[in-house]
Image (cartoon, rainbow, N blue to C red; front, side, top):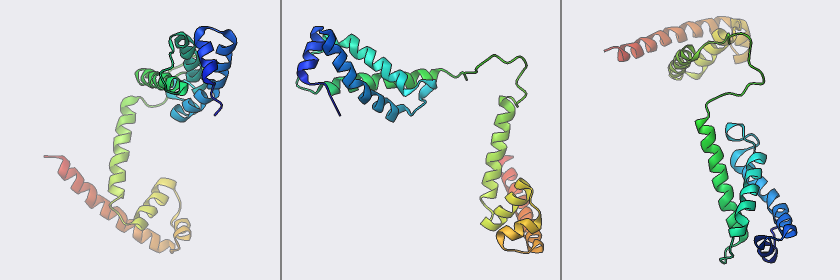
Length: 190
């Protein structure tokens, strides 16, 4: 890391424009790497690491006249500001529940609404829990036959079974699933 020397930092804190430029030039790559590590390329709420790094540089620029050397490295001062700016970006993202769109649509969204998505997600979770109780081969057969839509012969080729063996295993898996689902419903209804 190419950090600004203490003498340059002292001159920048005193208001020397050339020293300020040198300090900002030295800390910017460090701050960008730090922001990338904390936020990723597209961070919280759509704020990029570059955006947060820019905010950090501005905050350092504003705080520089108040900086006094207390024996700690100047980068500790910069990292303190960067940590607060990253936290601010994360807090702002947690409050912002909107999705950005390039243009306002002319027609309503045809996709299912939140209620249907929640019901579908719940049903999927329950089905996954039931499938998890089946043997791996039965689970694989049901997924390939019912989920993917493969024929018994195609599934047999994938799993090294005959088409008839796949159909028999599917029958057994569905019967076991009915029993498990009945037990689950019995536990849910008082």
